[in-house]
Image (cartoon, rainbow, N blue to C red; front, side, top):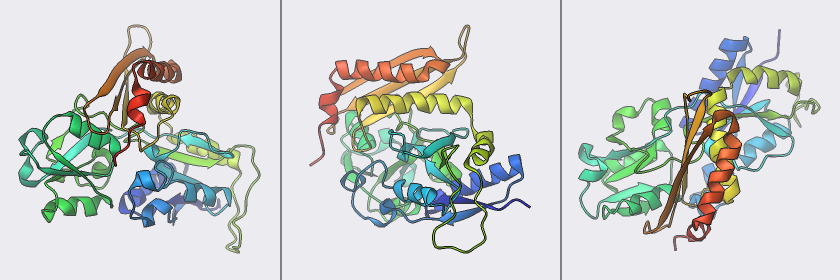
Length: 327
């Protein structure tokens, strides 16, 4: 009998739900049993704003360390949490089919953005969302919030804020879409690069098998190449290419999660070959200035499209907008 595969995940309800979804899908496709291994990350225990504790990567590094140490066989992340630089010894083995990447509003009394009164308090932990909310010119009081999904929804229930903005994908995976009062059109708010997608990472094929340090549980570590082939069963080609365009754009801009950048790639049927429609925006933190551009090209040239659109954004002054920070 094959050994049970160990899947590393953060401890939050959303992370556990996402990991279980991946585990179930892998078992269904390959017959391999999977157990979840909870890992605490710095982003889970800190109460500081993400931009102050390192931004992109604070939810990822502990899982990657456990992976390289042999404590887990593979890991699942929200793809938007991944730094754009490739980690040494680790590969992105699969990007499963993406959930709807749009942002949503959860507001008191069933209100939409346009129905919120002037001065309404809208909570978000994302500089990207905050900047785009301010750019709408709705006279909203955008306030910083932290915490898991239930914590943020609770702020609305308790009247501490009038609304919060969250990712639709997370609420969908948790079965909480009933709380949504508006799905925000990307024309108003472009999502984060990779939003709605999951990232499945494992050790690089060809690397040696690694037994977990300090354990005697009898676990027979799987060959990284064999595991990589198993995980590829979960990969969705169109999703991978769309997020490749978004993440290449982010990398070319040299932007992290503390920069107000939105990017959304949509695969579409072309006249001759599948195409990709990529939109991107960089907004000043106060919402008074922005650069918004789009590009279309063959889907299999996703990286080029992302790189070239980022260059156009930089030519239009995006770098100056990204250098601003909320004081």
